[in-house]
Image 1 (cartoon, helix red, strand yellow):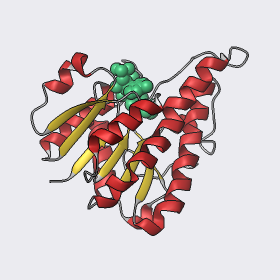
Image 2 (cartoon, helix red, strand yellow):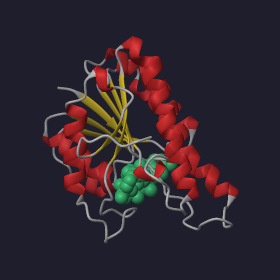
Image 3 (spheres, helix red, strand yellow):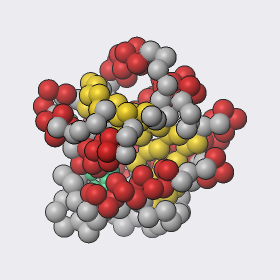
Image 4 (cartoon, protein in one colour):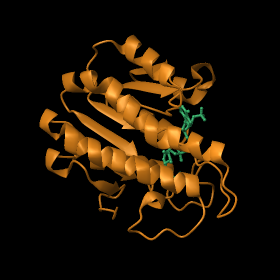
Length: 226
Ligand SMILES: NC(=O)c1ccc[n+]([C@@H]2O[C@H](COP(=O)([O-])OP(=O)(O)OC[C@H]3O[C@@H](n4cnc5c(N)ncnc54)[C@H](OP(=O)(O)O)[C@@H]3O)[C@@H](O)[C@H]2O)c1
């Protein structure tokens, strides 16, 4: 049975992915900040292990790494994310901007670095990170969401760069836009249901070949410009 480690698994897209991977027979290492409050996660049937992880804290990443030891992991799914301040030009809060970068851009890299030995032992050797089309420069930024947009653009570069470096180790690295999804972050007016987003993300990751490493995918399998 393959093993997935997913961050931010207590709600939204992460929770739905945890449910679906567990239903598909995977061992799910479901990470969240407050396991005791993760009732929906605890209710999932299947092989789900709930682990504490605050991705913004390098010490928390180190504790998780120590707890996992040399255990093989087939797929690392960096999902946890924050939107940060919503104001436009002229309203930037430096603290919020850096905190958003910490969670959305730096943490996925630190986690991938920490868990590289585990991924090397896994059969699938895949790292997938949930980015956003809002981080695409080629798609045409429409204003606002400076911290979020910049953090996802940085995440895209981090993962494209890691894809180039890890190619020789047989590890495939991609970033995926989940659609505009009905979650706490996406809001009620979002057009994409969380189940459809998660199903699409799983389909893309499932079909991922080493030749596709380093790409920016939409949840429907199409490619998004950088
Ligand atoms: N929804 C959309 O329309 C949309 C569109 C494009 C991209 N995305 C991306 O998709 C991913 C999931 O988003 P979502 O819509 O499911 O958002 P969500 O409903 O707001 O859930 C965010 C998840 O990230 C976790 N998280 C935040 N900061 C964390 C930290 N420091 N350590 C560990 N976990 C942390 C949250 O945990 P807590 O409960 O502890 O806060 C929660 O589980 C994010 O990367 C987001 O940027 C979403």
